[in-house]
Amino acid sequence: MKNRVIILGSTGSIGRAGLEVLGGLGPEARVVGLAAQSSWRVLAEQARYWRPEAVAISDAEHAGDLREALSAETSLTSGETAMVELVDSVPCDCVLAAVVGAAGLQAVLRAVELGRRVAIANKEALVMAGSVLMPLARKTGAQIIPVDSEHSGVFQAMHSGAEGEIRTVYLTASGGPFRTWNTEQMANATLEQALNHPTWDMGPKITIDSATMMNKALEIIEARWLFDLDPDRIKVLVHPESIVHALVEFADGSVVAQMGTPDMRTPIQYALTYPKRMNCCSPRLDLGKLGQLNFEPPDELRFPALRLAHQVAREGGVAGAVLNAANESAVKLFREGEIRFTEIVELTAQVLGRHETNNRPTLNDLLDVDQWARNEVTKCSTC
Ligand code: MG
Image (cartoon, rainbow, N blue to C red; front, side):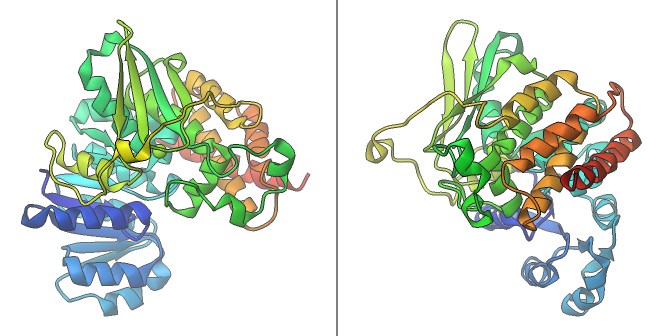
């Protein structure tokens, strides 16, 4: 067990589940740092309970309130670079990167620079900067262990063979709330309908990404970087029950599947305790009671995000940053009622079609292109 843990994004859905997991692991686990973007009340409550050495809040506006709510022994950093400073100043064995979106990237990079284990739930950081993060991790020896349930599944299943023996990796997708809807129905989908996920209980951004299947698109790119796979070897399989999280097909035709109840606490714990397995607070799987599992190929006509994913995974370079930023920005517009549901992917595709390729980007190139794509979405949404 990597016992000194920092959680970035501790007040979100993965962060809270991570704290539950750490609570269940007993005295071996210590929370030494907590960071959130703006939910200072929840952060203060978590800090009073876990007594970390330091906490960080990105939104400086709440720093004063938070300072008053913290005990004197807990130090506080605030502002845009607060998470990076936390990772820098508090020695730890593992960083659980659970911030949603591009906002978590710099702190993840610093943890990798320092050679820490990064239990990575922040898929956007990998999608955006996989071409920078993965080579850096090889250099510093930082372990990047997936928390995303499908990638945790691949990570576990691929241990059944050697790297060159993998033929195809299948990431499963629940299909989201609109799995059986036609395009016209989807065009008129409301925010409330998009937020109503059938199997997973997650934060709002990822729930909307699941409804467009952009979540799976991001996961294809995430898998490409995490496992250094040819994008053509990464496929998606719709599986409404969300019990099989991933399948790995080997050269000899054997397929190894990883299963479990749809509960993020299992992959979070595995990323923290790997290579050990310990008792976990998530519910057990009872296949006899479940009776049957269903699978179907995805429909790329109704869910065009999937086509974008392979295009982006093949191009590499800055393409992932463009896709991610355009999608984040379009999801925000949908949540604000500015665009229709199907326009999220339409706008993202438009902006992706307009970017300039750059195959060897620096971090600054990625940050620039991120900003460019966000501005383009705003421009396109009104034209
Ligand atoms: Mg996932």
